[in-house]
Length: 314
Image 1 (cartoon, rainbow, N blue to C red):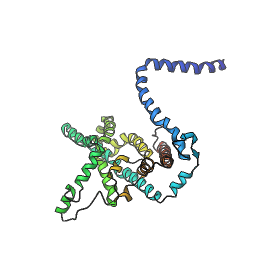
Image 2 (cartoon, rainbow, N blue to C red):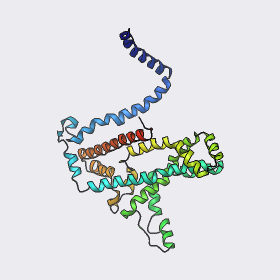
Image 3 (cartoon, rainbow, N blue to C red):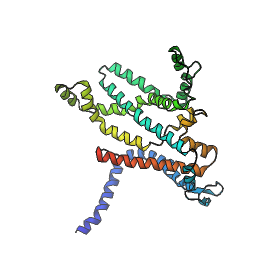
């Protein structure tokens, strides 16, 4: 009897699953499009990763090119640019994580504490708008405002008695400008998910805290923050899992020969090596190395979050 039940159970589960799919066919049809996109543009191209271990020649194709093992990885590790590229990538991502990640959280808490609806909507609209400005326009605005000859920022510095600063040309200012402009552009948009999470907190918790004599700051620390902590942890995991991927388009637009020492990251180096110079195998090896680091960090931070905070992606 047990054996019969064991044989029937998987079939019944499969039948039940197909029945549920038939009932919700419209939702599964909607899911079909993103799945198709991911398969075509994310998973099928992984077949080409083999060129990272080959001396790829388009005339011979993927399978016909000569196998060279880890030669391209060793070439990258031994290159003159390796230390600079790794440091720039890590430092930009780390500073963004430290300074840029908390700002949307603080903005959401600020918006949540505004009692007047008109003022709240005004703050939200003003902070959301920069997100819809294209990266090209943002970099153009930076070049205009930070121009050492008549730029808005340098005009203010000159009026205060300071000399003009070529922000876009000096390597020591690149990361500050890049991260600061990124915060201005994306903080409002990223705060939306935190505002949504705050709206789901039970209002009775705030009322109970008021009755207990908690100040506004105490209510934020002991009610608001714990209420959105799971969301913060999930977004932190996603951020760390994307740690080695910085804003390629924006960095490429801001990059010039004068600030290359601080602006050259893995993505821009891969672009120059693979697209401009045609070193496809070499750039594929660098990209694979970058992806492996991101994958390792994602697994690690998810494990830590699951152990310490009991919140994780899986």
